[in-house]
Image (cartoon, rainbow, N blue to C red; front, side, top):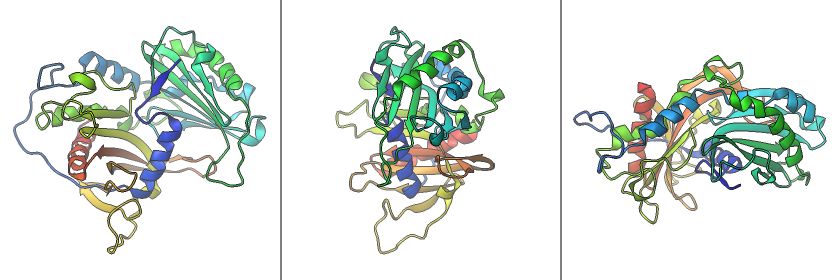
Length: 359
């Protein structure tokens, strides 16, 4: 089965993107003045918005606890007992951490999220085509709710940035398939984030990133959520939204994006800027957007987008082990806004912070 896991193409790409963001991002702001817009109506020519039924469906899924879809006893029986179960960097994701020295496959983590978009929802859950393995990991896209699937990702302790680390070269899919098989009865339940003992129920987890369209539709009257003026979202990802402001240009230059992350509090530390160097990855700038500390990195080199991270809330009382070998750190609710130029990214960031503050 083929599938799409958000717009970043998978968990590894998402983590690498966050690591880059942690080093670099900053922000700038713009407040759009004018007459208040009426309530959004979907599918009206020239005043597009995300499909209303789809938006309601997404809201229902945001209420769910992703940790409620994995059988933790099966994890302990197949591999070894979890050392941590809880919120990961994506609000829609549950992370199960495991001691890699206590299982033959050196598995270090399993994640699950209801973020995967299926091309064929009729394939049996345990079909081999649903599982995609490599030398260090296995992923699975399991049918759950129409074209929305549950995405499981199991990875070992191989670290590509550590020269002393070596891949296990073991097929991890058999163990993941056993865990998924044991978890299938949970797919018919409705575990709620509000009563979860594992994931946090912060404001960011309840935010719809596509809600920026209600604030930007008059600035971009031809905005689209996909090709040909579609009002259907480009993916089933709960924590991400892509919008094409000019009806989907072939070169993708009109795409803007918002994604929601939990990050380590260390990313909020203001590093001194180098006045002799241009703004960029290693020289971030700090500004304030609607009272929110933010930092920006403009396009440069292989980075073709301007990215702004707005740190909307620091939660000192919530500690999360962001990497397997790190002690738990305070967590920061973060909104990342992107566009092909920073003037547009400022507009997107301003709208996204407003949506968060109103929710």
